[in-house]
Each structure stands twice: as C-alpha cells, then as structure tokens.
Length: 338
Image (tube, rainbow, N blue to C red; front, side, top):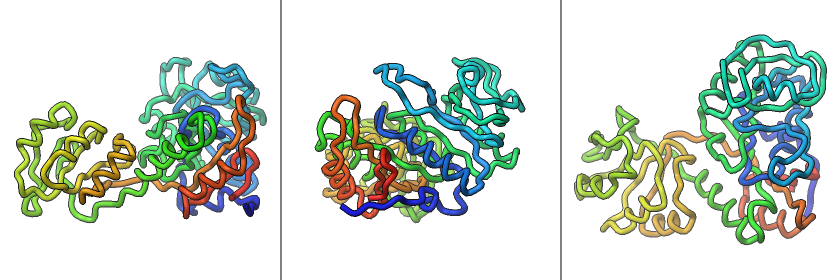
C-alpha cells in the first residue's frame, strides 16, 4: 500500500473557517488529528482558536487510565475553556472575557495564550456554547476555529458548528474489523445523502408534506411519537415528507411497511438515526432521503492501534480505504495519507 505524508490543511478548502474533528469512539486518534491541524496551522501562520464539545486535553483517560496526548497551544493562539480546565493547563493565558457564568467546570472564558504549553478544554458542552466561541474568536481576528468533538457525538458535524469535519475511526470502534467497518460505513452513508433541490416548508419546526408541489403544514412538532397518526393524516398522493427532528430506525421501518416509497427530507445527516440495513432497504424499495444542508466530510482518519490489541495496520487501513473511496484516508497515528 503506497503512503505519503500529506498536508492536512491541504484537504481544507481555503474559505472554510470552522472545522471539527469527530470520533466514532474513544481512542480513535481524534486528539492526534487535532494536534496535527494545530501544528501545521501554526506553520501556515493561521490564527487558531480552540474549543471542545466535551472535555479534552486530560493527561490520563478517565475510564481506562492510560496516557492521552496533550493538546498544544502556542503563544498568540486563542481558546474558549472553563476556569477549572484552564487551571489544569500548562500554558500561560490572558483572560480576555467571561463568556458564560457557569458550567460543570466553572465560568467559561475567552483567553489568549501568552506562554506556549498545553491546554485542557472543557465547559462548552452545548452546541450554543460552540457558536458563542466562534463569535468570540472571529471578533478577535481568529482565522480558523477548531472544535474537538466529543467521542461518539456526531452532532459536532452539524453546519451550525462546523463547515467541515474529519471523521476518526479505528480499532476501538468495535472488537473486530467487520463490525468497525459497519459502524463507519453507516456514517459515510449518511453523508452521501443528497441535497433536496426543491423548496422547503415555510415553517421548518413542524412536520409537513408536499401535495401538488405545495407544502401542507402539520400541527406536529415531533414526528416520532405521532408517526402512526401522521401516516393516517397523509394523503395517498403526497409527494414528499419533511421531518424537522430525528428520523429513527423505528420510523423508517414504519415507512417501509407503507404501500409506496416517497422522498423524506431532513435538516442534515446528523438527524438520521436509521441503521445502514434499514436505509438500504428503503432505497431498494425506491425511497429517497434528502437533506437541507450538511457540513463537508473532508477525510477519514483511521487509528489502526488500540491499547489492548496493539497495531493491526495493513488490514484496517486497506479495508477502511476500500469503503471510504474516493474520500481521503489518513493513518492518524503515523500521519500518513493512504
């Protein structure tokens, strides 16, 4: 298998300013990828801002006790983090502004690094916190905002949070390669959902269906608890269904039991919670699923190493490359493009 050391920022479109790193499990190389972006970003003279939708930068894994990679921060960089997390950091900071009075880790501050070291990020666990961090960064002249997405939380790939993201997978996603491939393929399949080229309902917060190319609003805000009632409300000749919240496995199974298939519209791929097998059954029936918006999936980063099993490099990288093609695939541990 041919490999070479890539420019990770070379995969990021020039106009993209908000970028997240999302992990499918713990220890899949998420922080390793973030650190790569930081180090290369500094070399390119980007002005970087850092925040996290979880807690990151700890010295030891909270659950398993093994050492974790620290998150570097360099003089001039910016960050949004909570008081207790900053107190655990090994860098110097100028406290610029309190952004949030309280969090599980205390008040949340906008800070600028005055002395290079490492940082612990935390206190910004809500999506609105990340939006707040972006606003604060860009007001200070930050060129790129980097978000460390919490493990197993694909919400960090929403367009509100990031214009693009790198998805991290690896040995810790499942105990065997086949299962890990299945879980990874499920996310890749969601991001292949196409954009809807037609119109959308005027009110996006409630369920709606299209009839004779006109949207008919329903009184239902959430489709899931009332899906059986919704099916009786729908006329046989409706042309598309808008679901403002989540499309669950159970909902799509009920759609499969209907007499005909139809287009389902979602806000973005993170709202799709149906499994891969059910999605493929829906597509085979002639059903379609479209999205209103989605962030750009830039690359698949693979960590072919686990603390328990060591390296299983070649089979993991080869198979992940096969299912991701033509998406760039990266060996996160050795910083190689496969």
